[in-house]
Length: 459
Image (cartoon, helix red, strand yellow):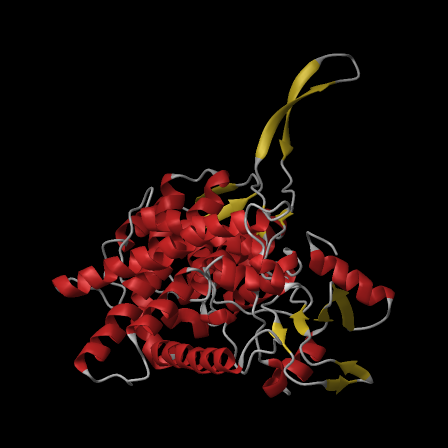
């Protein structure tokens, strides 16, 4: 099995065998890769009742302590011979309750209350690019914006603009998930009995890793939640998922199926970037960085996008959510970025709960279904970040001085364009490696607008 860029290998195998449904067997674990959007639609959507389950993932859920993450809880029942009926029923109903709470909090009308959080974080991002345009800071700047957004939405916490402790515990906690989330990364997911092997046993390094990673996961879910509760008790809480739902529970106006533990788990899942529903930290970072790479290669696209924004957005204003219907070219750029450089090449695995048949293939019950998202387009809400950057900054390839020797032997300096590498880090969420470019305000007026936007009310 490939250990990096596995989605490309899956696609190569599908082409080699002229199929869009690939069957693998890893130490007894049956894996079915869906390599086209048509197959994914036919099975995951049309037959969703069969394909909406989740595997137990012993490494992540049981050893690393990620059982709070409802993204790994089943829509239907677990299919696992080592899993008792009582556990399956508990996981099923608990997973449903978590998703109900998420739907209550983020259906289109309710989600509008969080728009100011997203807008504020995006404006702060522009200010960081203004103050520190170093291209090596692109990814750190975007991570800060994404973390600021999710912390304010989930917990109502306003973070520090430098060295924020909550962002640090988030990054420390999520990185192990990115490693362990790649199918086949740890043998214990294929042979669950290995979870009982003691940490001191030769070859059980996965147990020692899991023990340390579990501590990081608990810090990530407990610390911001405790801070949010403290703000609620002191009367200083901002609007957030936690404050809104805890106040309803305490006031007796919320569905009694929603408990404080479920609120904490849903908030923790969002903070940990594990939700299928809300844009995650790493998805946002990767998508916007990839968009910058694309604009470097196609400056004419950047100019056309800036022209549309200049024609639509009111003078003295930055793009807002209210402008989205009038900016179809920006929407097209966002969608094309995600088609061109899918940020989650391997989607969250599903579980086939009963035997099925597709195009003459027998699909066995209990098989792990892996949509090869590198081939299946993904739409992620990164619109405002892209629109705001395009509106205010020019983005172009960097140039550097190089020494060359002429035919006459004379040494001289020439200016050379630095081509971006387009290299990515292989993980559950792929992210571009650092690259050189020039990001500068389009004008002094745009720079002044960025600074002024931080003190205006964008509700």
